[in-house]
Length: 128
Image (cartoon, rainbow, N blue to C red; front, side):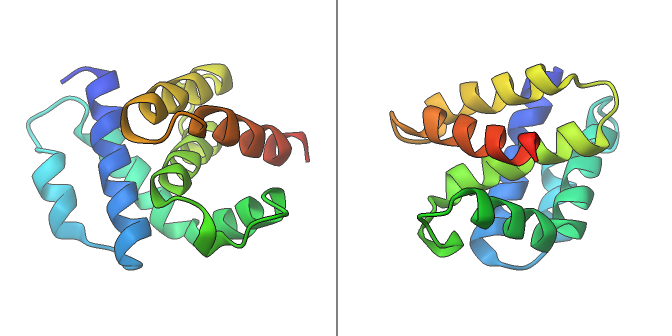
């Protein structure tokens, strides 16, 4: 599994966490097979996303001043959280790479305007 594929798997786990509103460790075992080299990365992303979910949610809601958190697309919310985890907790991923990668995932999984929205929210959060 490549890092790009691992990031997509991690995104799916974060999306599930955002959608279900609770942690589901069973899904981690399905998407992060122990034998794979990227398993640790996927598990780290999920762990930090779950542990920091409330803090990240508050930052996102503050940055999205016109929207309550519940009005933000779940996919976009998961992508923003994924980027924040990579930026704050994954040392070998530069900030620009983390942002660019979630914007690429937004083109696949979200609406046409999501990339600009996600970029704007991340920009506000990171400038503070």
